[in-house]
Image (cartoon, rainbow, N blue to C red; front, side, top):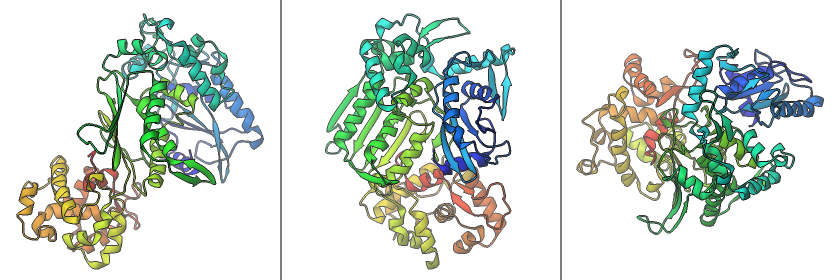
Length: 561
């Protein structure tokens, strides 16, 4: 987490997943109630040194080490939190004081603080110890969603591989030499990491699916999940088959290491100075990407995980239980861990950071590795990720697009800046404008007809054969695009860089503000393709419109869309 992320959290104020607490040299007594309520619900972030109004007052810098130690010790003590929770508190220096950040993951277990069970409701921690209905609902929700926590009563220590415990400790020791899991027996490690659990509704107790996936023998994993496999392929010379291939049906530790080795074999290193430190961009990007693949997979699905390295992109599909459907905006998404207990082990290995860091870090470092290219993450079943290895944007065709849409010459600077944010599929790399347009127009029609809010014109030409019959089709938008389709595309392209309503209408030579809003802006907003830049002050004179991530994907014909 960076200081900019801290600012965003404070601006959001307290809520379902955010809590502020004043603290100087001691942990507030209500802190542990919030820890339990977050872990029992959707996880969250606790900021110590911030009051209820969001004002940073800071903790006592001299007490920083003591506060971190007190929190870590208490959360690993069953008398305080049961089952225990392992976290890594850290501090950020805000201009108004030192803030201690504690990120609590959601858990597949039901936790209590000194025998009391808490659940999060808006910005409150509710004691539900005596509410059997609320506890039952919480148990059912966790059991149904977190399939990693499914208990297999017949699964025993004999079905696990002792050598994997040694390998896990070696990895943990290299990352954090004083981690408490280094000094306990295998059985206790399983209990501490909630890979051995008790279901309080059925009274069953034993090893979980996550335990088998991390520490199980290959025969154990294949017996539990006969269809499970992870495949990595290189498709450059032979796009119908593969140039190299790796198939994995093994434990998650060796799966992670195997995928990293495969990527290192086929993609080049590239180094970068970040804050004066030399970092390996390939390592940090694919540490995050492969970590996400392993941590967030829905393991009960028979769909294989695929990582395909092509000439111009890396494409990954992963079985998923989606929370919503559509592209993820890295700057504004709320991450939700799919397998919190697997994540807990990977965090101890140093292979995963705080929740959501994988997408944020990939978005930060891929442009440095691939000359400005941005990743695309698509929450669906399966979860899809595209990592371009080359950058192709619409800005390369700014003058062609200006002519196509009939925009004035003074719009070209704004248009080019905005189109630099519209990534095209890497399959269009090296093509001229006519060839690119021949792919875009059918794509716009295909996606536009799926969005009822747009009332996309049905008479829009949408096949390559029809388009090629139009005289001067690549130069004249009035013959290629229907009037309504042209307006929709023009608004999305001009709004790729924030633009005021007045400027938008002026460049489009549109006179009636009400019909412009009713026929175009409102439907585009309802479809989630554009949004206002100042949502909480809609009448502000500084109000502008900007194309959303979904709108950019609509325009750019990204392969995932």
